[in-house]
Each structure stands twice: as C-alpha cells, then as structure tokens.
Amino acid sequence: MVLSAGCEFDFSIQEAAPTQITGLITATLPSTPMPTTSETPLPPRGQPTVVPVEGITSTQLNVRAEPSTASSILGIIPASTKVEITGTDPGGSWWQINYPQGQGPDGKGWVTAQYVTTATRPEVPTIGGSETDPNNANVAVVKQQLNVRSGPGTGFNSLGTLNAQDVVSLTGKDPNGAWLQIDFASGPEGKGWVNAAFVQAQGVENLPIITEAGLVVGTGTPTTVPLTPTATVLPAWEDNDSPGSPIASVVFAPLGTQTLIYNGDVSSPQGDGQDWIVFKPYGQLVFASLECKGNNSLEVEIMENTLPANLELACGDQMKELAVKAGSNYLVHVQASTFADDFPYTNYILTIKTRP
Image (cartoon, rainbow, N blue to C red; front, top):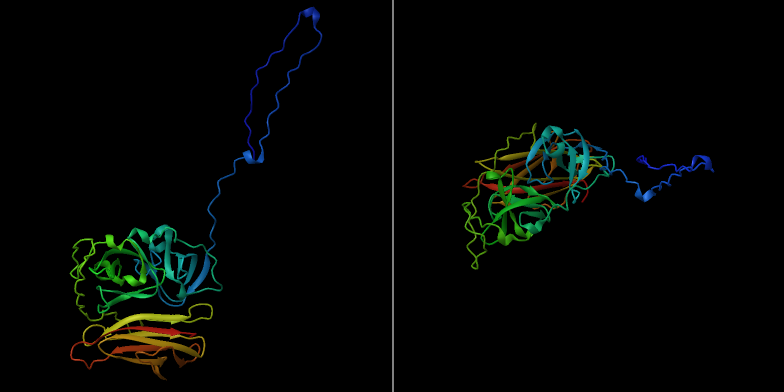
C-alpha cells in the first residue's frame, strides 16, 4: 500500500480591465511525482515462525537450561512423553523443546537428542554457536565425550559425563594447567574438573589457580611443576535405584534411539553397591561394551524380564554381540565385588548399541 499526503497549492487568477477580458485563465496544478518501487518503504520483516516438530522420549530425560550436561536441570520428562522440538545445538546432540513449566529462557529447555524418537530428522533452526566464544577464557567447548571428576586427576570420583559440543563455563585450573575447573550443577558446591586436553579453550593462563583444598593461589602458571595432588576416592553416591525403578531405561527404535551410554560407579560395603539399567531392543542383536576403572572388578548380570538370559558381560568387553528378543525388556544388574579389605570402588561406562 502506498500512502500519499495531500498538497495545498496557492494560486490566483489575474484579471484584466473589465472591458478588455479576452479569456479565462485556468490554473494548472503541477504534476505530482509518483514514487518508484524502490522508494516505497517495505514493512519490517518479522522473525520466521518455527513450526515445532513432534518427538517422543524413549527414556526418562533431564530438561536442562542449556545444551550441556553441565547445565542446571529445569525438570524431568518421563519416558514415552510427547515433546515439541523447536531447535538444535550446533553439534546436533541436543534438541531445544517447548518447556514452559520449567521457567527456562522463553519457556524453552534442552534434552539429549539421541533419546528422542522422531518420524524424520527435524528441520529446525540451529540455536547458538556464534555466541559461544572459547577465546574469552570463560567458556570452553568439549571436543569428545569425557568424564567430569570431583578433583583434578583421573583418580578422583566421576561426577558424570560431558558430550561433544557441550559448552562449559570455566572457573579455574589446577597448578599444572592440565585440568580445568568448571561449573557443574550436580558436583560438590556446583563445581567439577575436566581434562584440558579434551576441550577447546584459550586464555587459560588468565584463570585462577585452584588448589586441591579449593583455595585460589593466583593466576600465573608457575615455572616449576608441582606434585600431582593425591586423589581421595569416596564411596559411590547412593542413587536408590531398584529393578522396578532403574537408574536408566532406554527403548531402542529404528528412527529413534540407537545407543545407550551410562557412566556410573558402585562401591561396597560403603556407598552405592549396585545399579539397575533397562533396555528394550527392536532387533535380535545388540552390541555391548563395558569399561571399568577402580580397585576391583564388577559382577554383571543380564536378565530378560527379571529371568536369567544367559548373557555375559565383563569389564574390558568391546562391542560384544548379545542375542536378544525384539520387544523384551532386558535388565542389566551391575554390582560391586566385596572381596577387598577396604571398600572397593569402580567407575564404569556401559555402552549398548543396536549397530556396531
């Protein structure tokens, strides 16, 4: 629509002597210039409307404020729940969903993509990426899956895992600069430690140096390398899971979840002595791996609907084939051995895939 303003013109009619009128003088209005197409102001372009894509959770999921397992939890969504997907992170590992009940930014939240089943790959906008600047020494981007630990070393307890493309906030470093302290909501005092070799960050030299006792002793990296701190192993945290309330439960689907990865720890007689994990395959074969670290081995039992399934899995197994029945529930029971004098502690990573 082109809007034009009205114009006023001041003109007069000249008169000759009354006896010598030779004709009527008419005023001619000057032509009004017509605006060209380029001169017509275009209406402001609105933001494109994102049509949410429906997905269904294949397991109970944490909804987080940011696309990172280091982010705070806004709430929990049960398995087999419909969600509305509105975006993805740059790495494609997380879905942004509508989650008004979580009081997150703009009523949104983030869930792990591998545990949401969709009919096709959602065509949704990528959120973030350009805002993440690892050069400012405040954040870092995770390059591959890695453990978050309670202290600066592999001997400290694992608090959980981070995935590739997760973004974490840096709060300090150890005296060597080999380990970085991060904000980690589920860690002691909201902190955790990651190996600096597996994150992308610059300006680490400006981070404060954090001692094993949690004291800030400066920012400059010393010229002499101090002794590696001694790790103090603590009992595994009690999670109160059971066969009827497993710590993890995943339903595999051809166009949905293809992989289960669970990082846990057990200890006995102190701490949490066992974990229960459930998966439901859609085919007749799965591939399982079990990585263990600690001062003892694990006892692993796999059952079909609480009955023995004659399936074996041990620490060190890599992509072991397990014959299963499609649609059956399989219960993995991980238990700490109790033959050691002191309490045995083992951290483990269980991986079950539908394809090798």
